[in-house]
Each structure stands twice: as structure tokens, then as C-alpha cells.
Image 1 (tube, rainbow, N blue to C red):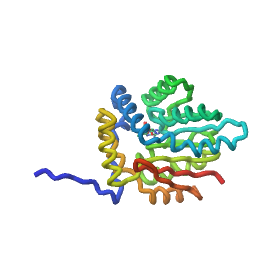
Image 2: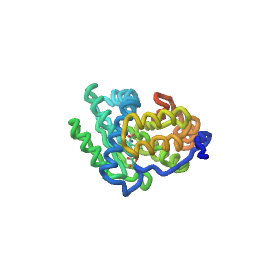
Image 3: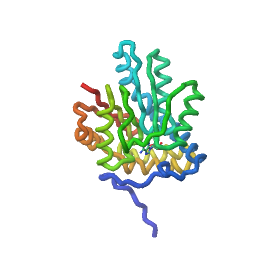
Image 4: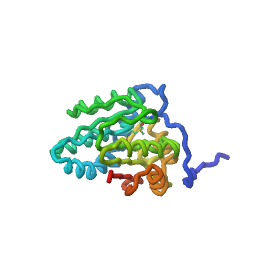
Length: 240
Ligand SMILES: C[S@@+](CC[C@H](N)C(=O)[O-])C[C@H]1O[C@@H](n2cnc3c(N)ncnc32)[C@H](O)[C@@H]1O
């Protein structure tokens, strides 16, 4: 008789995500990025970064605020920030980077289609120095891709590279988060990549306590973590 395997959320379980596979068919990759975009709209994963970014931009006294989104995927976060900045009349220069050429092309197309001229470039954020010259460095739905040591290392390098602040948004590992991801991914996308990667991402995600411990290990003194819908966390660190 077949047995139902319920994931154990007491520890991370890391399994490969289809979107990370280099040979993924570009059309299937683009379909998955469109699905991820719809999930981002529902989970407000650009809007939750905005209040902190807007506050810092208003402190700039006329200088543009330079923001870099790491592992930007389809560019949903930079495009959302660009739209909110235009609406608020704030001068932001927002760039995005990703290891995947397909994602970079898709993000550029999305930005252009919405009338934003964003700089999106290819970059492996796990090797070499992070791009320099940015006030705020963000990343969303990426930390859970990494093993614990690489996650701490990325947080440390983001802290060192960011002139003003680091913002990290990701999934919370929990049974409820897993159920929501399973249902949400099926309701919002027909992509088998999204159906597979969503629940697998929750199993690999961190708990808020684990994230705060990693932030401490990365030297982010004073880092703050808040939780938001749907089973997500936002880690914020500002340079003193
Ligand atoms: C789940 S997607 C998240 C995309 C986007 N940040 C979002 O929230 O919609 C993870 C992204 O990380 C990118 N990625 C994986 N490894 C990377 C690396 N070493 N350097 C830069 N990007 C990477 C993938 O190509 C993919 O676009």
C-alpha cells in the first residue's frame, strides 16, 4: 500500500529546484517566471520592501538611491520598486542581476513593456565580489536555495557591499507555508516547474530564528526580522 510522505519541518530538506537547472527549456523557464510573477503579486514581495527603501531614499537629500536586486528572476521586484518610486516621485536607480541569461532577458522585456529602462545583467552572486556602488541590496526567494554556510556568506557579502541597507525576503519553513505553496502554485500557474519548485522551496526554507542566527553570524548587528503574508519573512539591516 502506498504511504503518504509528509515532510518533516523540524529541519531543512534541500532538493534541486527545476528552475536552477541550466538546461531548462527557455519557453518553459519563461512560463515559470510568469507564474512566479503572479505569486509575487499575491505575496506582495516587492511592496513589502518599499517602506524601508522609500524612507532611505527620502534621507538622500537629492542624491539618487542605487538599489541592486540579486537573483532577480523575472525582475518582478525591480519593476515594482521602479513603479512605486515613479508614483512617489523618488529618484531611484534600480538594477537587477541573475545567473540565468533567460531570466535576464525576460526581466528586461518585462521592464521595457512597463516603460522602465532598468539595467539587468548576468551575475553569479555566489562567486567573486558582489557588484559595488549600491546603497541598498535586496534579494527575494533566493536565500533558501543555499546551504547554511553559503547563506551566511551571502548575507556577510551583502552587508559589506551595501552602502546603506540590506533587505532579504523569503519563505518561512512551516507546514502551513507548505500547504499554501502547494495550493497557491497550482491555482496561479500551470507550470510544472512552479508546481514542483514551490513546495520544495518551503522544505528548504529557514525559520525566522535560523535567519536571525545567520544574520548575527554575518555581522548584521541590529538586524530586524518581521513576518508577513503568506508565511514569509523580511530581514532588514541598516548600516549604523
Ligand atoms: C526562485 S527564483 C526568485 C526570483 C526572484 N528573486 C523572485 O523573487 O521572483 C531564484 C532565482 O535565483 C537565480 N539564481 C540561482 N543561483 C544563482 C546565482 N548563483 N547567482 C545569481 N542568481 C542565481 C535563478 O536563476 C532564479 O532566477
